Length: 106
Image 1 (spheres, one colour):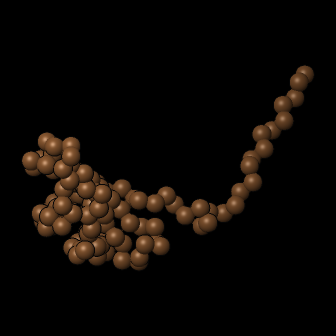
Image 2 (cartoon, helix red, strand yellow):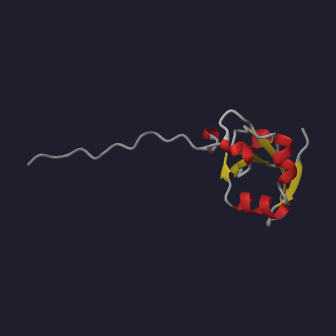
Image 3 (cartoon, rainbow, N blue to C red):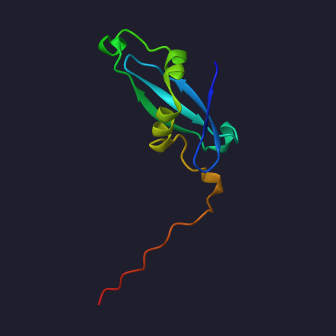
């Protein structure tokens, strides 16, 4: 499947992909140039108001959704996008649980 390109305000060039189409929405995925292992990909939901949205058995076509996205729509979706992955736990320093101070009864 083809991808579109989007240049973010910070100069990063993201790949734009569409996945998980439903009858009224599809996930727009912003692929970070560092690759899938970088945990920097982002996503947002594209909401359709087309005739498919009124039929729960229909599905949007990924390529048609991607073709319908102009740069202004992509920029709006990107500005409200969410990170796909949680932070990498291996990069966090191991910390032992803090011990609560012992209480003293008087």
